[in-house]
Length: 317
Image 1: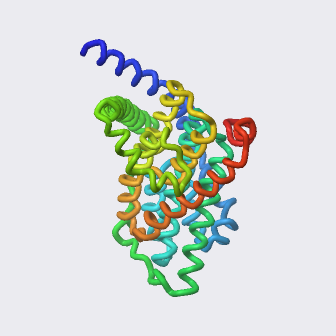
Image 2: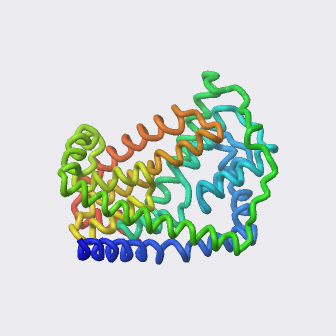
Image 3: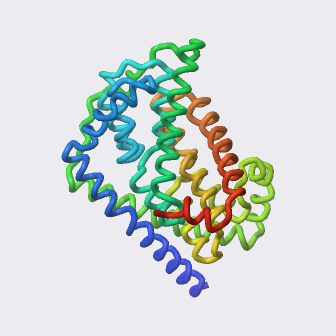
């Protein structure tokens, strides 16, 4: 029992350090960019793009902040700008969906790259899908009147007295890293228990209909499921671990990471966007269905390529 506990702790520490080496430098760079106003400047420069989607510039600031800083950074920006934004329910739901598709891109896609997929390709996939989906939701609303009522932002329109000092940032980062390590340890224990009891095999069998539709390989189904439910950091970290131990081929690895890039953290992140006022059909059902269609299309594309071509075009660069 002691040997098992020590071995699990060593695996957890190794996986945590893999993630820390990726996350910490990027988090520092993003914090500096935020302090110097570069994120707001970038959002202003993207104003024509957000207007093309059908959103005001304030919503562009929220989205870019989310894409670079994370969901909670985007929520902070939304709270701060809520009094200035005039949105319909469709626009608010589209913005929430865009935040869910594309958030924490520097950190999360660096993890995806470490796990075995192209940083730039998966980043473009997330941002492009978010923009296209948001534009489609707003266009459908304007054409049909669906979700065309003014959005009520009064529940979040308050003066945010958030402490953005470096001391507070460091304390928050330390808490986040401690939580991540604890979750990694619990996930490794859970996955081992699932393997030993045969639950992994039964879950994989239960997912077979969905796997056949999306083209996702059964080898990566359990860890992908963890990431889909809890978040890309954990799912990507577990794929790193699985690839190290089982030599997952490039094709199923990329498809798993593409799925995780587009739809992950379905529990916490979806609840957060519901609290902001997003429509459940838009931010959850439509997002998951679109992810399934995109991954299915990618599976058919990659199925026509050799392993060498997949490595050349879809592997980390």
